[in-house]
Image (cartoon, rainbow, N blue to C red; front, side, top):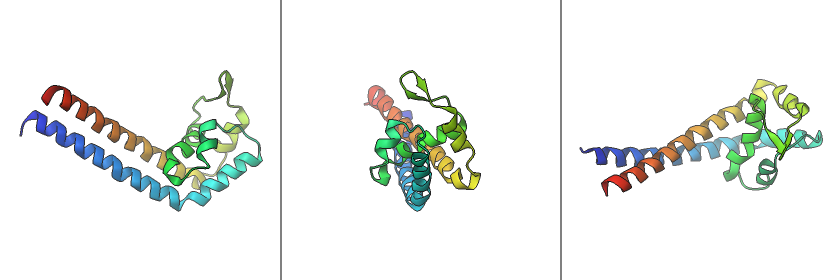
Length: 137
């Protein structure tokens, strides 16, 4: 088996694995959609700062779950985020998410990690294919 065969095989495997992981993420989100809606409604009731991506994607289907949950995962981890161009997300927003019980938000954090792994495999498969196409075809 030549290097080009190994590279294309790894690329295809990586890409197919990313599809399977994305489907698994979709299923996990669908099982926890009520929990997400509770978090989102509490967030809106308290008039906390919600980013535009999460706000808009919340009206879309569960297929957009990576966009829906990333903001909350980053808030929980304490990543410095901006609400508007030069305005940082306020402390109350961070405090609300970080004060949530672990059992209430743990599914979201795990799903976010799964989404990051999925992105890694998808990008890795794409880059592998580009390298294979450029050097071996």
